[in-house]
Length: 202
Image 1 (cartoon, helix red, strand yellow):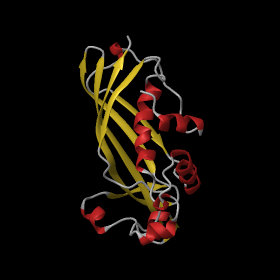
Image 2 (spheres, one colour):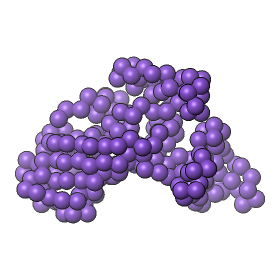
Image 3 (cartoon, helix red, strand yellow):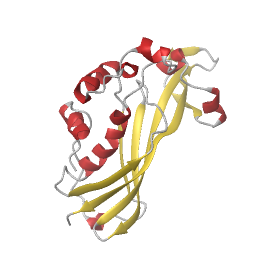
Image 4 (tube, helix red, strand yellow):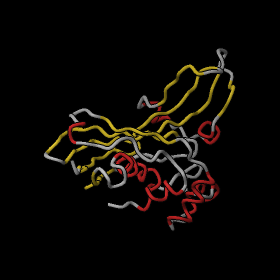
């Protein structure tokens, strides 16, 4: 299954182009394939909009996105979920080690500029040369960094535009951790859960 969005990522020089040749003997239940991407910018989304043909302005124009109640632009759904198919295509050496049979996903959360996108696939079953995965893509959205006196040292787009909701806080999605310069507040949530199946040649 050739994925035009994965091809686009490679053409843009986004992400790495493979790990090692996958063999069925490498897998067991619990085996994890993982990658992450931190490079969602307005310029990148404008380039993606032109390349994909999805020119809906909520992905490229903050004023239009604000009028739509989004508080700022959001990434295309296929931009972030395309990273899922790219994960498998990279892992399978772009058809050398096997093929991607099926991907089923559910888009739950919006992806914003500046987000760290983590894509993780965990083996849940192996049948012959087919490997079945649970897929989880999550985003980490930085809000701000504060010093020990609770003064803001650095504020990110999510803090400036109010992307974090009371519901996020109630659900325990907003967290803190120590970083150089102070305490970082961020939101971590699942944006795209799903499943996938690959078939190996060996």
